[in-house]
Image 1 (cartoon, rainbow, N blue to C red):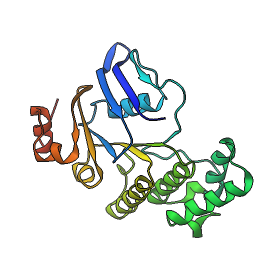
Image 2 (image 1 turned 135 degrees about the vertical axis):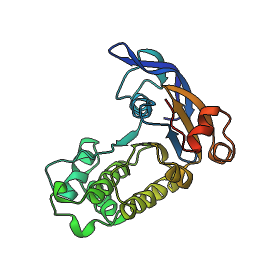
Image 3 (image 1 turned 180 degrees about the vertical axis):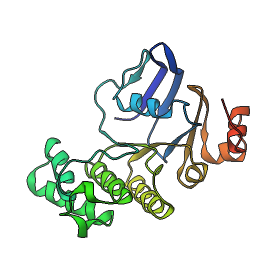
Image 4 (image 1 turned 60 degrees about the horizontal axis):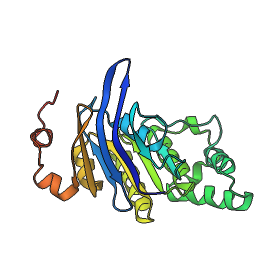
Length: 229
């Protein structure tokens, strides 16, 4: 149900501001990467956009549940087999049995885990678990896929595999909204960049414009590797 609009959104915890007067629009198109230093508010913004949190001020529309899915930095997996981790959420979504089986098996093939279908999900490696989490989310055929630092704990080979899955999902028309502090990854994946600093949107621009010449001093400092506080 795109577009998703955040209008003057603020969020605080225990009186400490996490986000302050954030406005942006998520529309169909290339992946949106939310960049910023640690503590900028990236993960909180992602949860607000997905509807997992409610803003303290402002609003996120549409207010009805969107057809979205989310993958966290540390995958949340059931104490079941890899295949069962795919079938269960499809059942909750009301997908009929034959279609449920087809989607689950196809998703495992797509992420290279079909040979591990019967293995307990929690016995998979970190990279395999993240690929399974992506497969589970993509099998729901969401309009928007929210990804919170999905490669933060992965080695280069696992990161490459996850990024390739993200590209394939995006190529099917799913909108990707993803947080990262990895500039290399942002350059590889982003079509649009939202740059956060101290809980505020400092820049929102096409990726090629941001990386060629950011409009803000904070963005320029971030690209140069300077410490921001």
